[in-house]
Image (cartoon, rainbow, N blue to C red):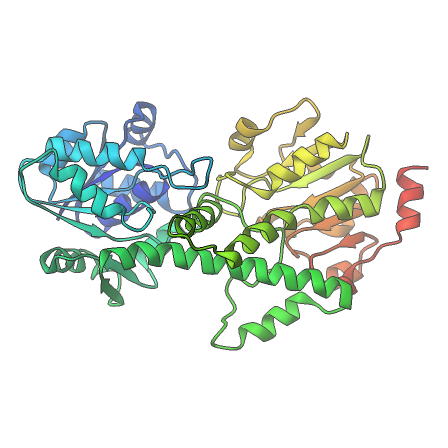
Length: 446
């Protein structure tokens, strides 16, 4: 099939490349000329394992191309995929201006029947608005469908090529049939439903996963007070097939482009129909507060943070991505700077993106994990990059001024902790916390 994908961001680029890998002819469109120029010369504007090689292969095979010319790409396509951003407005609602603009461009370029698919995450009822926008500008026939994406940054290529399920929301049986054929090489687990339900499935799925994360973090906080181990609690919970083990890793909360945006949007969607989503509001509140436990534990270990040198391991909101949108590290580092601390920060991929959001003369940007730890009064592990767990606590003890670690992702094992001299603060594992607060304060603030 001939496809064009409007929006070469995370969702659009990965989706377009993977559809090309299935043997389709795909044109990815973006109005950012620098991005298109980069893609045409073999570069990739995002970090995603496996994506660069897949782009190279499909460009060489003639199945994949990149352009800023929406009109030409739409004219040649059978299926048009809308994958532009829907960022949050100040009130939490999704900003649909990019979707409307893309829909109008498609309408103006129409030269025959097209199947128009929305992959962007949009509020319930948006596809009906898309249909009206397009119909008001063209007399050509077209079909509308909602096919939400469920990919995870860091494993987006695998998630796209090996999905748990495909959801196709379409009122026209012909549209549903065309999109079923397109997606059948990926999985036989294809759900066909109405458009509004498909739109809601995306929001409901992300809201539920965010709820699991906030729930296990609340359990972790209780575990710290009652002496239970949240990792063992989560394992026991996950053995129940009704619950499952995924998204039960306690830590410093979720970030990124999807969960924060989609939870706020769903709260707003509920408010627009006069329903208060109390549960999801609490999920958001818990998540925001969880990241500041790192600051509280630092204050417990060091006392006054003014003048302290704190190492930061991890700036991306999760490993295997350079995405720093709503990353916990941003709030944590801002709080440290406000408290007068000096920071030594490192991330394998995300430093350049992070510095666009926060740059300060009080932050030293390290070139390695070891360099970030050197001379620090305490070290905070905020993103569970694999390389961090490979640095032994004994080695860190030699590098740091004082052996204090706030492990926000529970990376280090009980055996590693027991053998070390660290004052160690985990999340929800109080039996592993090795701290002598009076001693640490006397050493750091004599």
